Amino acid sequence: MFHLSGSELLFYGGIAVMIAAVLLTAVCVAVFMFTGQKLKHTLEQEYGKQER
Image (tube, rainbow, N blue to C red):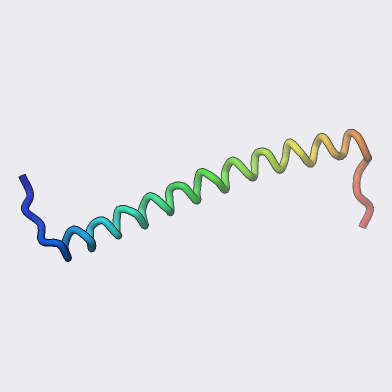
């Protein structure tokens, strides 16, 4: 098994948390983009297109 000191454990643990945060951010962006398009389509059907 690996024998890591406390500071090494914090270092590699921090890297793992940062990677997890980046992956979760990518998932959230994808979900919000998909649901945003769906919501925009629904609102356009109910209220018409927005004029600028």
